[in-house]
Image (cartoon, rainbow, N blue to C red; front, side):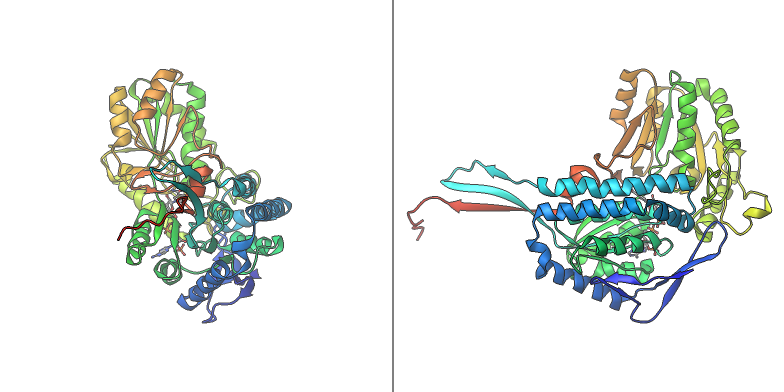
Length: 488
Ligand code: NAP
């Protein structure tokens, strides 16, 4: 049990109101840590610190090269503590250790990737119809408020902070109230790396009032949010008041389409990984398996057989393949959808409950669950469940597969399995989604833009696109004529 403080203006602080929140291990409900519960006054402090650092601190005069070096240093520090950080994310979020280790490596790589990009922020010169030297420069936006969810605690912090800092912004980041620990450890590394005070502030607290106060704060120039669509709407509404810039990475209900000519074994494994990694708590999860009717029975049988082998347990046990859900509330939400599924015309093939073993009693476990013959119009196929629940939807033709895939309010991700490259590309081209794969599911690269179509949000993270989200564009025109304009 550790008592944490939050990180404001380079210092470790309690909440002004003295309030704290207990942080729980979802595998056994044990108390892991206590963190300050920030209120609006703490958000004021954090934004003021970021404002000072941006408006009058040394950050603006630090060269891009040195910003990059700080990010490289941070990546090194993360690698030095990678085992500790992975264990912490596993204890706090519940995910298997192997997944947390992957996240930590990815987070370090993300800081390094943007460290390299810090010196590659270029403008352009323009050919204009005047005797003018006209050009464009890109500048940091200012103070950014960043709000992240609980499913990838450290990695989401990296996705937010790395591009923002590379571009020269100052940040106030609020992790989820459920999983703030690795972000606070990251704050210690940010201090150790030598970032000036106030450049990064990490505030711990609930969506309301802390998150809400951040979205409404007039000192914030841009809001960058990852989370659910309902909260995303609130963030956007708050941003409207003073027209803050906004990027939203929201939910999904992504299609995973398997054609008759797919590599059978690879597609079976892909279908499982698509939905069950991180207990299905992945925005891009392949939660709708859209399967060619002609291979449906054989395919589903293979998927169910392999699902039986998924070993549930605490993420910290190296044998565990699937951990608990992040919280009791999340489990109740998922179980609510499972009940809706059971009452629908769909057929429950496997799972649908909690594991019986007594050792799971205090954790928030849900069995991997598969519903077959799901109507794509039904609630379990349209709503984001955000848990280990797969909806299987058969199709008769390529056109029907595409129509089903696109019949969703979301448009985050999608995949096609087929050895016919022409068909695979033809289908991918018609998917209304921002992240797509052929013959694989889930690989995510720091170099590639991440974000959705439709109600999955707008703006992109990662890649050079992610950097652009943190830059303003300024044109500069230098008159090369000596003669006065003499307009009047
Ligand atoms: P959430 O409930 O929307 O919360 C996300 C963040 O917003 C948390 O830090 C939360 O704080 C905060 N928040 C809640 N209410 C707020 C308000 N009124 N104003 C400002 N902030 C507020 O989402 P979640 O349950 O944590 O995460 C799951 C969702 O994230 C899923 O829908 C998933 O698809 C989405 N997601 C999307 C991506 C992507 O890249 N597209 C990636 C990961 C996750 P508290 O936690 O303290 O309430």
